[in-house]
Length: 346
Image (cartoon, rainbow, N blue to C red):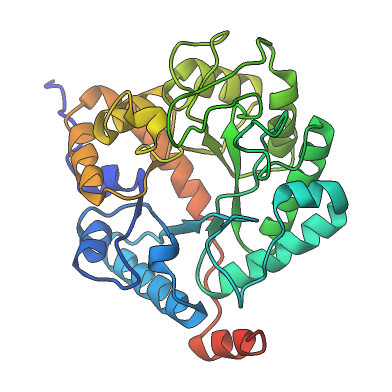
């Protein structure tokens, strides 16, 4: 029997990508990514966001395009952490930085806040929040200092799992980040590859919040562009040792592994996005994030489709993404409800 070649269907490979869009409307580039490349997800940034009504209209149109093209709903995400990392501003709830919450808030308060935030996101059609941050920042030199709940792994785990419960209760899928923990770094992975500096091979402090998040049912975890010398010479995002052994086997995580942006300096200084996507998928990632260069998403998909050896890993990733999409709640709000809800906030 002849050996079958690689899968060429764009709908199969495209679903493994989450991509950014150029602007606040569904124009030619956005329509091509959803209709023709059939991406699995969209990530929204300030350039895409003008207000509640516009966000609702954007997500509605994106979902209609996706359902017509592939029959699959899109994962529509953003970073709504709080503090300086909050894409949707007023009239959406303004969220304190995680560090402030760690100093002053109880777990029930964090859970209630996360639930309220999720309800607002769901109202405008956002179904995934790239939060909470589970990094245990050691000190002010850590780039995650203000974005981390604190220096105590127990505190980070307690508030992180509270946020996870709240997001899920509010109807949005949370994504815990950044595995295996950027808390012992002083290099910003947006600029260069971060280096784990603690020297602790067990990384118990860093892994504890992720263990608790897995136990709490977090559906997705984002990778860190981080080198852990005691584990591997490769960045975590590209490391089978870290993704498959440490996260899947040791922590028993069965959900979706999302890469951090493959255009960030921590990866891009090593590889451009297409081969980085190939390495990340081979290492065990499921959803490949390209935030700005949408042509790179096309190029990466074409590269993956050429490699028949990737098919088993890709099928596993696709199955996990299918299970995740089944957890999406159908959007219930109409534009009138969105306007009525947010008009009282202005």
